[in-house]
Length: 101
Length: 464
Image 1 (cartoon, rainbow over the protein chains, first blue to last red):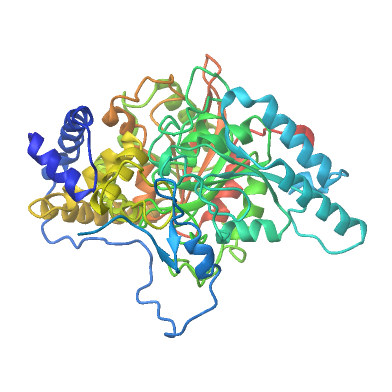
Image 2: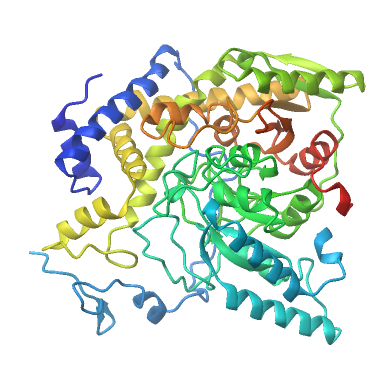
């Protein structure tokens, strides 16, 4: 199937990518080849076959709904937040981001 | 581990490994080396031994860590820019278990970024060179792990295998590697790629070492609810009687020297009294297409967490929140990461889900059934790992589908969740390592290692 530039822009949006024009064009060709390759599954009749979602043999592993000791604490995790334009990434136990609206 | 029984101090073992790592710097194996931390750990272990305190089964043994395992020591990149070396506050369970037995991480090794690739060329930190020919690729994605072991810098390295990422580089460098049964080793603290396929495993120079590493690391983990109840340590080794041969891959698609090596091995097994069973599994030729639908779909989901907000790299060129996501991800991911994320979002998007993703999951069922059927006729399968020995650097990097074909024989195991062991069997006429893989039913890991020991090349005869 043919992949258009609109398809690429749509997939970039779904993927949260701001692509350069050059990269979008190059990915267009790559994706076309990849999709052409994976389309060969159309040759197979899978009528009545159940899908496999996972190969783990067990289902529904339950545990009690309680807070267990964790390996990392809040401070350690907040310290991972990246700096932004020279400023520290956190303030008052929160992560700083630019304006949302 | 044999090296641990040598009459030598942990400090000198670790120093030797660090010296070799420097000597082979041109191979671009390590992303980071943690010399001081490693030497200090070694000193602690030597002191314990001196005081007569109990030390673990890997006391003082240096190892290389694939750069997608989180550890408090050092920083994790997954060979990408977007993690902007992550100083993780936790240890992966596998790392925790290795270190509690006294193993010493000397550094973190190169890979394809996020384990997306079959050559270690898709790394933000440059390509790792093959141990036998520096113009050729190391294989991937655990390329750094395989070359570090092949050049004898360390006796073992950690790896992950989603579609061949342990077995193919092990085979390209003439060493042993195990991809365990799905769920055998905890993935807690390992950078996720495709969760229904990802396995933690190891690369080493002999199967006894791999067996010890499996003894130590296998087992159920409350932090990873996809781990199987403990089975490895107590499995009884089953000697196989019937060895399967995949007729479907006896074609020109596979390099003739690899096919000859396989046939020579099967002939000698036959002479030793094993029955060789011809298998026809035509569904396996669709496995690669299934893999390159399911894997990108899971990648698209797993890698959506890299948003530039909570950790890792954040683009400074963004004006608002949406630009932070878009530009961080555009600047932080390698091109192959982007191909896979976009392919994943394609096969999952409305209008294509049934035709691609659901279809692939149905074919996955047929592949699992084909393996179950095969293992009712034979005990193990002996097959090539990859269609060719190590290829030239740059040869396939701009042709994603040609690169994907590398995985045609290795992805089948991950789709079915069955274990495989890569073993060296010799060299090509031009001196490149040749490897094969032994495949068995679920939980046959220990038996595979034992049989691989019998039929694989001995790398360190002098140490026995």
